[in-house]
Length: 383
Image (cartoon, rainbow, N blue to C red; front, top):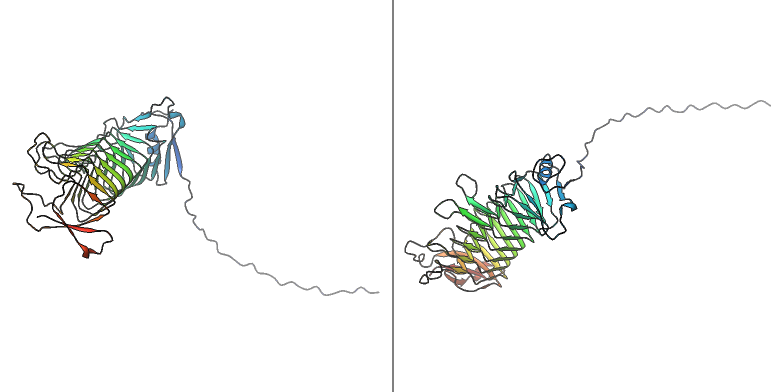
């Protein structure tokens, strides 16, 4: 039987499709670098990794970095570990988080050799440390920088006004950028002046140009030879204080607790007590608690009481002046005879929502129901 054969089908020839290749750049996925400080020294030593080494290393690129401290640095004797700076300020110029173990465990001491931290053109966070011994402020936050300070103690720093420098105050912190202070205390700091006129402003904090937010913090026992024993605000900063206590602060001029010149100020759940604006013969010190020469002040659930303003307390025949709140827009000061400003001068709106103010207040307080504000709004006028 003959074999059957079938014609073989020819498969169609497939032409290979030509694909164009592209190179697609991937996003930068470098992980945050963590540097661990293992020495309390500030000296250059190849065998040790100091805080200054960590900051210098982190500043080498714009990648966010974290600086931590080795457990071995912390003593078990109940004494705090201290890093004493001998080479000047620590300059932060890139995104860095300085993550301390707690302000009760670690102190960074500027050794009266300039500031402790300079923050320049950066986003920085400083948390869990005590900052002390700064002689040009404890921390300086420059324009264009965003600084967050959390769970820190800023204590025992100072600054001296110098016409050749770019700022004139802020014993504890000088802020010219954007500052958030949270869960911290600022105490025992001082702003001095090298001039006869007391220019040193903002014993605790000086904030100019930028913004300031303070939450859950204590500002106490600071002093200024000029305005703002606790806090000084100038040059249109936005300032919001929430759950803050200002107590025991002293200014030689205006605003023992707070002096504000320009920009809106909001006080929410703030206590201002035991501050004073009184010393050494300067005429017309006012606003023992709060001095406001700004476009608007809003106080909500705030207590302002028990503050003092006047001449040297040893001169009993001098009257108190605006012991608790002094409110003036701009710089409408009294004249040489200490007479009040012209009758009926409008000094702008003040919001007082659930706020208690005791003691003396300069000017009459009149309701202003047409403002449309959610809180009670009053307008200060000088009689």
